[in-house]
Length: 630
Image (cartoon, rainbow, N blue to C red):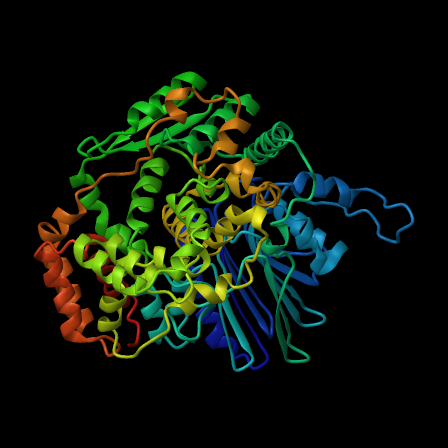
């Protein structure tokens, strides 16, 4: 796990770009405290920060140079099947001219490069892991950049004037001194509506995200730049084999167990986040099943919250005999760490501080790598949105109700709540179905408040529809369709982005077994009748057998309960008000509308919850922190 930077192009000013690559690499020093590496030739400049996880020796330092000196590699991530690939690359292939590769290190880094030498761009189809890497061919003067299938590891870039600048974090591009730091007004509109900017766009005008399962080819000699995909998640939402329910459960158990086992390879202390929920408990249970070492588990609890999950985490810890760490934080502890959490945000995110606090507490306990239950809800229909989508698909009769839009307005006026507004918007649709209603369910602001905030009008539905318009499935896989939506929007653009930027801010590697691509491919192909939308995650629970106690399986779904509303009106009021006033003066928003939203929050308007205000505060703070041009 590391951080990578690069500048590649035809017209390169050596002294300018040597300075730029150093600045870029320094900007992400937190991602790799163990070593720094720089390399350049006439057209390519690479930088690397290393967080040592596998093979802690200097042999794993990067940029990594091929044995003949032709190829240069920078790589961020972990290749979980690197030992299998290494064995294959060392063998003699009968009937082939390929000769065995002689490895000089025990790193997965060298396996990445050796795989490219053997299979070219097709090597990515063989990788099981989380990764973003770049390989420069010094002879043919061409660059390959690849990203993992589910987008666990990030890769940001700007391609302009036949020069490509890329990095693991946007801040590296910002501090390079060679790109324009201009705000993207349409991205601001998207962020206001959905609390994120969906890939491939970012908050900066000319900076993009390489999409999951894609790769970049950039040929300097021919001045060609192309983006291609090697994996498409939409290809796997059809049943490929007629398995019984028991056979399906057995296969899920087999794939998830193998995924956990693959992710336990590390040469540093590791553990697992343990909330006591189904997903994290399942990961811990399977870890204890396949590991010969005692598992370390971490639960961050807030006793002042309305609920505490600590008792559930402790129960799982006792069942699997883990070395348990219960880290108690008060709201004051959280509040005191909020400034550094905000400083750690690479791309604006209102939810990021939670991830930062948990990651920091785990890192301070002596852990360098942790497994997470992220992805379980998206894959196994664990959110309420799955049930709502499924039920809405069965309510085509709503479309023939006279004046259904008027009924929606009456509901909104009566309920005076966020959910009432969403119901009203759904009833106003020309065609009511789960697909059309999905973006509405993920909105932060209702339509009228959202439109009032912006000077220019944007078709907000396009932000998500452009991503999911090809996510079509048959009637047997409605729930898989929702999984596609959740994976490609909320999970990749909020959960995974936060998990990476906040854990790496404290040099902690997070691995996510539920996002093993083989497991994802199989579960997406499971038909609805096996997933039972009326009972969240039934397929996962049944697949685990008696691994988890009933108290965990049947417990209510929880999360951190923190007094955010009170903070924004109390301890954080001055900070928030300063940012709101500054934000109201931005060229792309309506000043009066922004101030009205703030006052409605202060006056306890039920439609303006703390999260709607907080996201605006975070965005403005991010603009100020990085001196973004607005």
